[in-house]
Amino acid sequence: DADVTQTPRNRITKTGKRIMLECSQTKGHDRMYWYRQDPGLGLRLIYYSFDVKDINKGEISDGYSVSRQAQAKFSLSLESAIPNQTALYFCATRDSTNYGYTFGSGTRLTVV
Amino acid sequence: DAKTTQPPSMDCAEGRAANLPCNHSTISGNEYVYWYRQIHSQGPQYIIHGLKNNETNEMASLIITEDRKSSTLILPHATLRDTAVYYCIVSPPFGNEKLTFGTGTRLTIIP
Image (cartoon, rainbow over all chains, first blue to last red; front, side, top):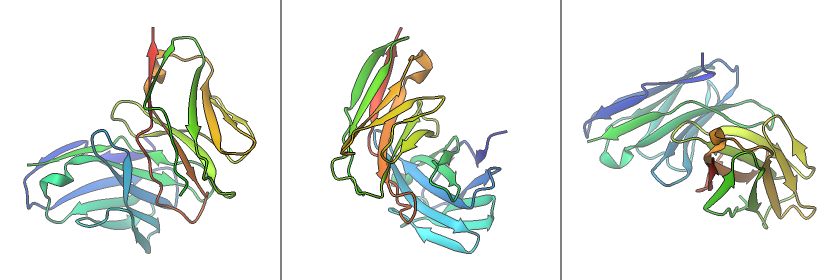
């Protein structure tokens, strides 16, 4: 099983719909992150969480919300999806040392 | 965060060493150099990181210049599976979670 699992892998939704992307991890890491990647661009941070009671905005949090249901679960919601939220979304984890991030396989979201 | 500069693309023959450069002339004393790669549209994969000493692991070697203003990631015997976009990032280990991945270097391994 993957260390960081994202569901769904692909999703097409309509403008105005609410959608949730889910992420779960088996790494036991405290820190979890949601990133977005647009074609030809790098990754941009949406939200991050250091533990269940700690949620922080990233670079591009407008239009998104998150929930850290447990140490192992971190979900990203689009309350009212819009077409420019069409992108590849990645969840990542990191432990409390200075080692690198572990990323999930991504969710490709299309808003039509 | 310190800004990094990488060439947009590079080619390397299969079996040869791939040397990927990164300039980070504004790096601060507490910032580490991290390297990741992304194969097609998969999640980025951590490769290696370092502060000032050269580092080696099972995937690659990282050479950091003495002034820390640049570094080179070395894949010693490149294979076709090393074709990917490689990202160089500088960041302190703690206190800065807003890690920004730039556009990286697209490395193509030629058979």
